[in-house]
Amino acid sequence: MEILDILIIGGGPIGLNCALEAQKNNLTYLIIEKGTIVNSLYNYPLYMKFFSTAEKLEIAGIPFISTAPKPGRQEALEYYQGITRQQNLNINLYEKVVKVSKENDVFVIETSKGKYFAKNVIISTGFYDIPNLMNIPGENLPKVKHYYTEPYPYAKQKIVVVGSSNSAVDAALETYRKGAEVTMIIRHSEISKSVKYWVKPDIENRIAEGNIKAHFNSEIIEIKEKSVIFKNEDGQIHEIDNDFVLAMTGYIPDFDFLNNSGIELQGDCLNPLYNPETMETNVKNLYLAGVVCGGKDTHLWFIENSRIHAEMIVQHILSK
Image (tube, rainbow, N blue to C red; front, side, top):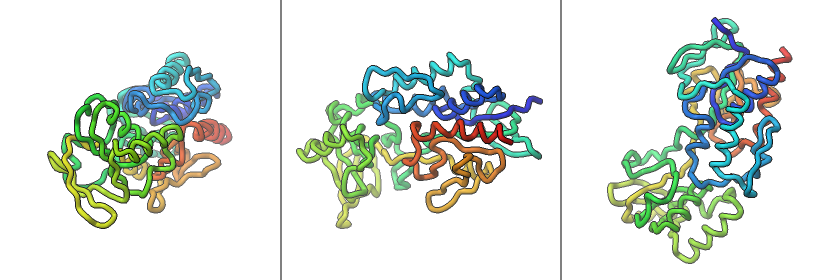
């Protein structure tokens, strides 16, 4: 029975960074990823541009060369998957971790394909796999999409975009420019202040000129086969014709998995308990890295500000 020094759950940028740090320090490790390398990035919209510049997306000091000021999805895939190949990282793909438990001082990690043993476990699973549901009638209809990839399927269709974040704004602008009739349903009184600064004036101008309709302080209350029903700030109910709903309502970590692994979740945002100086959770030798640290506050952590987690964790492991 091989007992690894570290088992890393999640093969995103931060998971890869943890592996590179372990490799640099001659620790035995394995990444287990349920999809492809940087699976979340692979599922991003095809033409997505990062808010961050290339150097802020770098891991392990390996240069990220981009021809544009803001790299896009394809460049990021080339960069992170290229590192995985070049550094010959030890990674199992299309294998899902289903349970993490502890027997004495050794973790037992059960997956869809087998069982592994490790002295330390790092959970770096991000948050992109579970949509933040609206929990309204009709949300399970085939026309409702919680992920947006490209605008072409929505040409000449009546589209409702839910939300006002970057993903919602990108979807609204791209589908509008491919001929969709776009209506935005927004809970708040304005477009989110976190929207990319070069995109925000574009969406605001399209709304002001009436090419994209926007209902602020409003929320959908039901989705039907051929329409959407929503309520505005005055409590008035409206029904509009609709072909597709793009529910860009955000995503959440797998809280059930964290809880079942023994990690305490705190407050309304279910923030996982961990030591910010070591990233160790309330379970000894079980660590968190990356976006998963934020609970429902998924805006707190990004690639650029969580790259440091890998070194913090590995140095804590080596200090024991």
